[in-house]
Image (cartoon, rainbow, N blue to C red; front, side):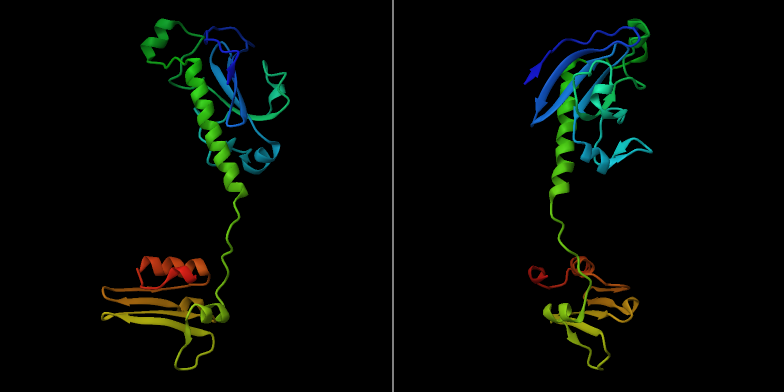
Amino acid sequence: MVTNKKEIVYNNIERFAVIVAAGEYRGVKYVCLNQGRHPSCYVMCSQEFLDKHLDKTFNTIDGLHVHGGITYAGMADKLLGLEDYDSPCFGWDYGHAGDWAGYISEEQNLAYGHTKYTTDMLIKDCENAIDQYLAIQEKDTQVTEPNPNLTKDLLFKLGFTPMLNGIDDALRLEGNNDGKKWKIYIDLNTPSWSYVINQNPRRKYEGEITTLDDLKSIIQLFDLPVDLSKF
């Protein structure tokens, strides 16, 4: 639901702020401001979100892309026109190259090909920013599956067997499927000696394979006939 909806009126008045739209989308509040020379938008968020994701050096939030980039992150009530909003927020403005500017004439803006923004355009941008914000939050709450280091016990469980020469901490998994021979050799003592080879077509990898994710990736890369469901 959107309240206080008004159309944007560009002007050249300093310290000018009028709320042209205040709304809530997917449970997140946002405000669109007419600041005379250009409009701006602000999305309410948690301080925890800013503390975790805001790069204060470059004023960016990884995974969040808004018009012209973020120009403000902090308490909303410190901003002209948002004194009643006691919440952290992030925001952006439309005062960049190619944007309509209230400090020059309409003829000049048209001659330069500047984009003139409407309140509906700002609302759509707010909703897009909220979608990104919620996606980042959802990712924060996801439990990351562990990526354990390879051990002899783990490799045994995955079907690896010791090398015939009895070298300690050296195990292999191999097969011959319709004449297509392949082998995974894992050296836990000297990881750089590990290798994977597929005879048909012949491909070989030499290098460290130290984690379960490394092993999964190499199996997929070489398209080996190994049941990944047990990994």
